[in-house]
Length: 148
Image (cartoon, rainbow, N blue to C red; front, side):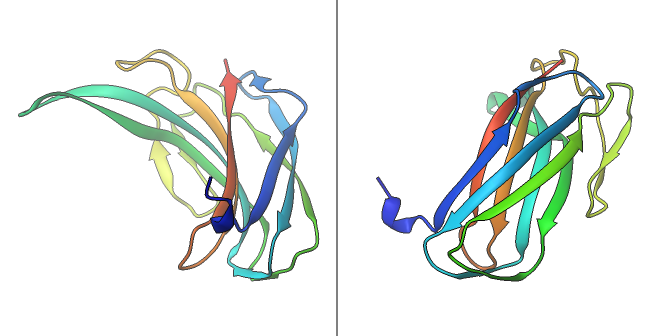
């Protein structure tokens, strides 16, 4: 529908979509741009979100909270051309007993529960690949993973 706004195409390739705690995710990213773009870099992000409910003055309110995030840079700041780009990566799914979690940027968060059912249900896990474009829309792709 809005293909004219698209900067290009990005794909995530994994051998499987279900992972156990502590297991390594091996995958690759394929990117093809329609025109050259100056960007901060290419990165892959493993994150978990949990939806909870809280009482507010307006009644019950649902909200989603990111309880885990790990960013892995795959390429740096430069002008990306129209040739195909291929990146491989390895990420490790955390163990449920980890209390402190963080990414490359040093953002450390405390996880209430990474794998068990909380007030709002189990955490949903995602893997996202993106081309970080300053002052513009990022090119990206996000897929949901099963983690148990």
